[in-house]
Length: 87
Image 1: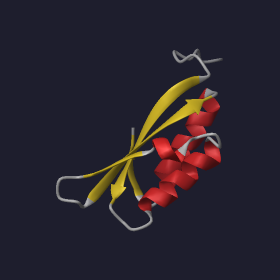
Image 2: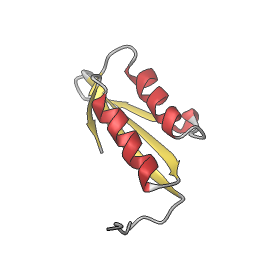
Image 3: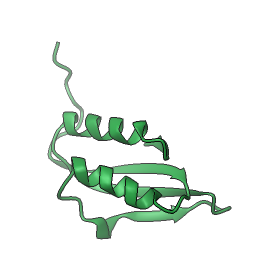
Image 4: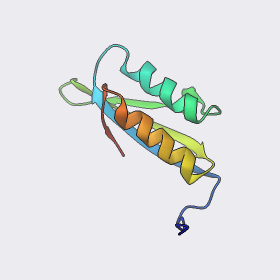
């Protein structure tokens, strides 16, 4: 059975990545995003620290080309030990 997608590709798709504010967290997250979305412009990456400064929230808006691409990106991010949550 073929699942219908409610998303029309290609489209701009924001991905929020959250994890502890470790030194390499933003670099690691960016590396994973760029692996799955090579055309992502890192200058558009938004990074926000939590109120206490213990966590970072990174938003990357990629040009999504397929459901498969998004699924693989989400899997790679959620499997990484530095990543706590992906939305």
